Length: 400
Ligand code: MN
Image (cartoon, rainbow, N blue to C red; front, side):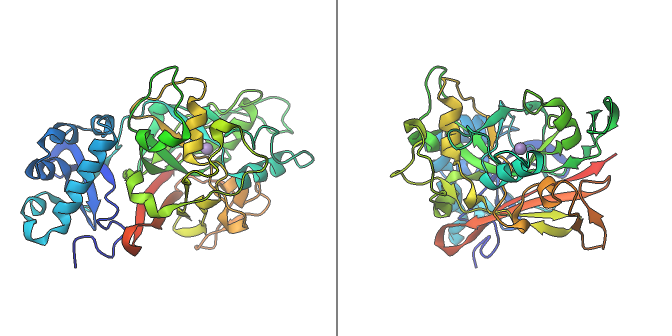
């Protein structure tokens, strides 16, 4: 049995991370294989890719991301070959660290951060909750992927505690706003896309160029204070209700590992403008199966394949006005919600704004997060050679 076989981190996956080993604070790039992290730079050096070693010795993935798709592929192939060849495990063995021993860091310095709103089921649920008498979807929703610019500097790695945000809230029955800790703290289960190669200002990135710019994806929790959000975001978009923290998984799964997860997105009706029209092109829908655990109880299994807008369309839209991309840009899918009641990606939807609380394994009931609660989002996808590959997990605990 080869290294990683049968695990969610087989050689077909090779997600990238930044780690440090015990007693050695040096951060460097590695890939997960089975229950280990393989340090990338020395293995590449021993396999004739010494030119890639400096970028892989950095404390963040950004220098490697900036090397571009040809380098990404060469490094991926070199690491896979080193792992697969049992007779040449020597450079591998000395550079394997048990995952349970290492510290995993924020894998890349986040440049700009954008969050979309691309699940039709999520957007419709939110519309039905807050505008029961109106159309569930706003009139622009099926013509463009709606998004907003978030706060890059508060993106944190999985495991970072989340301090309950304070701010202004105003219930409909309150005559004026009050100040205090959010009483309606929520999650949004999402997938984040990581830009490797930048683009020049004034030059839109077409649908076909997605793979030249986007290196990989992470799991993402867009923590959301619903009471702060609903009071502040009229008429502009999300601000302090979301900017206090966004958590990402420590592993960036390369797009190259997801070739077998690609599938056609749901049919587009009405037809979209030419720069968003992906009909007849290889599809960028992705068959990712998410799972949300609340204090250890699985409360939802959102299917990413139901997302209306694909990451390629989101990238094309984000740059169609000439806005440029930078290495380390992160853009998130928006809350992933499927059509069923047990496929919703936020607690706002799962509890239907508090009217149908969620039962947890310990017998307690919840609508929104309480102090001490732990939320863990994980995901899997079909990989090459009949494998199932993992995206790892993004977890966080709420502190008062
Ligand atoms: Mn979001």
